[in-house]
Length: 330
Image (tube, one colour):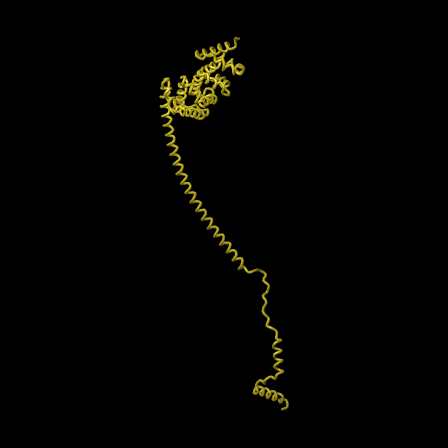
């Protein structure tokens, strides 16, 4: 029986405890309880373990933004390309239209130029024939368009010679006939006393132009125009003031010597006659006698005096006789 006593006591105590319930704590116990509660450690929060790799989300977002920017740039450049292509097509269309218009304008201008040249050739050829009459020359010079006519004549001849550029134009072309007729009119006007006076006093620019063109034309080139201009200058030289003006032009004597080397006989004939005009006028010859004698191509003149061309031979022999007369003591 003694062996079961403790168990009975403990069972009784436990039953009493269950029957009595929890006993209320006194004041000190409550304070201790609060102190223990306040000293209870806070629950530990799980700390994330250090990551060895960054999260891929920011990289993907950045790449998406870059891709979107590239897509926008592509659309922008595509729009610019389409605009440029449209502008190119429009400009090509406009240029094609302008080329067609330019071609049409050139065609019309060519037709007008051909018409004007043909008309000018016909009119000046008629005027050339009419100007053989002294009365006609007086009528021409009496009009208010004479100065303009001779100014245009010089400009036209100069333009014609510049356009040659070493090429030989057709002798029967309207352009040639136009220029030759103009030079023929000047020659006929200079053949009349009043015409010489007019050219010396009012058309000195035309005389300068003819002297210049004679030097610009190459030997054997456009000989008919050369002959007409030399004939006109010879007619002007009949007037004493005309001869003075021509002979005092810079390079006049070297020009004459150069013209004497031309292969065309008519050019040489009229060059010799112009030299004779200087030699036969003592007052004019005395001013250039020294230069004349020092530069005179006597051997060339002697060769021309033996030419098979009777006319050229006669003129060259006459000039040699005039030169000998100038060299004889007075």
